[in-house]
Amino acid sequence: ILLGKKMISSKFILPKQNLILFSKDFYNLDINKNNDKVNFWAFNNIKLSKKWLSFLNSNKEEYLKKEYNKNNIEFSNKIITICLGPLTRGFGLGKRDKNIMGELLNESFEAINSLNLNFPIFIKPYPLGTDNEKFLNESLLYEILKNNNISNYIVTYLHPMILAQYSVFMLSNTNTSTFADFKYFDVPTIEYTHYSDLLLKNTNGKSIRPDWAKYFINHDKNKLIESLKEIIYNLDTKSVNVDISYSNDQNNFFLINRLNGNKKQKIKSYDDIERFLI
Image (cartoon, rainbow, N blue to C red; front, side, top):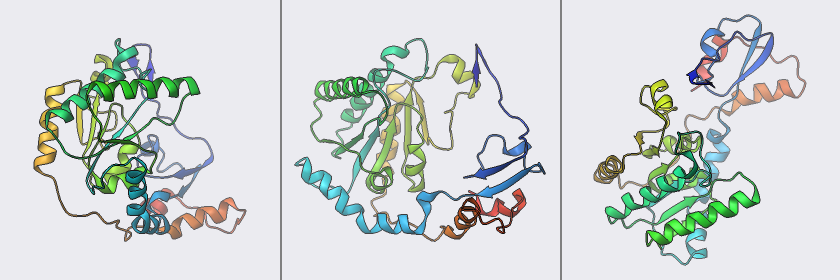
């Protein structure tokens, strides 16, 4: 938590309650593992359920082809994905925050253009904001695309886990939970951003989620270009298939049964559920 000019920890001992864990990354977990006042429940990432992963395998190409046909662009099974933040406002990344998002996106396209990459660019807009903010974001996006002479692009609302299976890399100018979807498919993730000096100090010069962003680049276009060269040099041309072997749907049923009023469902300690978490 950023308080004034200091970054402080928000860890605390939880009171008597039920705690539903989606992963081991819950920030208060380390001091509450042995808290006997807490009932622990695990809920595995629903995006890794067998039904969802099987649906992706069966329908991903059809959905992608629809995007190509709708935009009159020739089909390619290799794409670049860019996930946008709000272009008209930032996330407190420093004193230059007001216009920084558009500047970062423009530099991202400049870097991609410099390598003459022949991959369609799938651009996923930021989904939140007022109607006016969305209009301004869209207007600025098309202005930046025009300024960089980019025509081989598709503005898409496809699910990230579909895009990930065809992506050479995924780039965003802010840290986003969407990185996690691409990481699952071993897609190189790039956070090309502009952290303030204070934020960099408190993250030790890293991303706020280094487990999500494989490449963290703090507003250095030359470094971005070198990172893109590295990714292209190591490009794996093999097709991607979803691995459904990990999925543990049964564990989710335990929690659902309890939430539906089945009080006979056994309450668990952290030790009981740890093996279900990733």
